[in-house]
Structure formats: structure tokens, C-alpha cells
Amino acid sequence: MAYYILNESLNRKILGKYPQVENTVYSCDSWEDPRFIEHESVSFEKVNFTPITAKAILAKKARLNDFMYPGGMGFSKKPLISGKLKSILEVTDKQGLQIYNSPVIYQGNEIEDYWVLNPYIFDMQAIDFKNVDVYLMEKYVHKIKKLDVLTYEDFIKQKAMIQEKGYPYSIYIENVHILENTTSDFLILENVEGGVMYLVSERLKQHLEAEGITGIEYQPSYISFNEWLAKGGLREQLYGKA
Image (tube, rainbow, N blue to C red):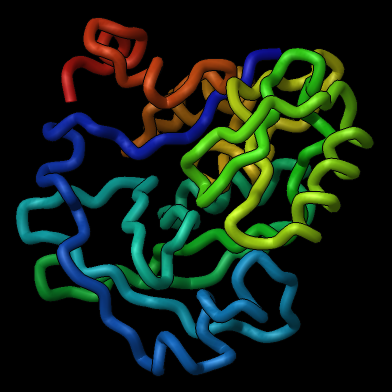
């Protein structure tokens, strides 16, 4: 089954304005408060309390979409989704995901039914490691060498060794292929391009499109972001020029 990375739309007609988010409001000290969603004890961790989230302020000419990627403090590697999209994702079999209310401010009004994803379990065992490239990275941008990784167990061993080295070294997976026997409709991966990937199956993609979910461009998981954005490439063919 094919899988697709959820990317924020680059089409100005869908966005209304790029970037959509022009500022962010915080109700706590975003650097120091241990309850804030970006704090190291909360971000990508399972917690037994409701974290403090940020409020994205949308540009006046932006459009409210079901899927947005504000970026910045409060939304680092975490998308912002509408209640409509939340209700769809909640009925998938994805484990290890907490979803927190994160209202947006739009044209002077606070829109309550928006939510930020905070995964704490990643679906790395779904990766077909025989068909991906795994690298030792320096400062997250420089490929030092390709690693001999053919199984999930190989990946775990290599990752543990690299973590012992510490910064500036990290492990990175490129051109993600998903195992053929995977049945989950919603996957979340780490140590990949962009840091974290949110992927949907062909089946869920079709459902989201039928439901009119807005703001998403579906990138096949096995191609890189640069390939996806190439002039005249697949993205442009499917969604038009950015």
C-alpha cells in the first residue's frame, strides 16, 4: 500500500496568504514553563496532564484550512489541525499520539476548534530498511557516511551508538519506503527529512480528499522533498506552481 507525507499546501489560492501565520501568542514563559508543549519534558513525550499550548495568529488574508504548519515555538515539527481532521485521525489505529487544543486567532476572533499533535511513539518498525538510505549526519545537514542498515534492529543499534557520540552527530533516513504488509492508515516517523513525518495510507488519503480536508499536499513517501519540489516535477504536476 502506498503512503504519503502530509505537507502543508504551497498553493496561494488555498493558503490565502503565505505564510499563513504571522505571529504567536503565549500564555506562559515559553522557554521556562515545564507545562509548555515545547518543554523537553512534554514535547514528544507522554504526559498525564494537559500542556499549555500556543495560539497561532493568522494573517488577515489567510484562509482557515484543516491542516497547517505554523512552525516556531509551540509548533516545532507539529502540525495544527482542525476539529474535522482530528475526528478522522482519532478513529485510525495510531497509538502513542496525544492531541491538545490549540486555538487560532483569525481576523480578531479566537477559533477554538484547532488542535496540535504531540506524538510520543513513532512507527519506525513500519519502515522497509532494505529500500531506504540511512546516514550518519553532522549538525543535521552534512552526510558523513551511509550506514549499513537492513533491518529495524540494525537501525536501533546504529542509533544507540550515534546517541552515545552526542551532538553534532545524528542518524537520518532518506527516501522512506514502508513495508508492504503494513496495514496502519496513519504513521508517524522520526529521524527523517524535516525531523518528523506524518504519513497516511492510500486508503486514508482518498478518504481525506472525499471529506474535503483542506491545506494538504500528499507527497509520496519514497521521494525526497527536493525531488518533490523540482521544477516541472510531481508536485507541480499535481498541485500547480508554488
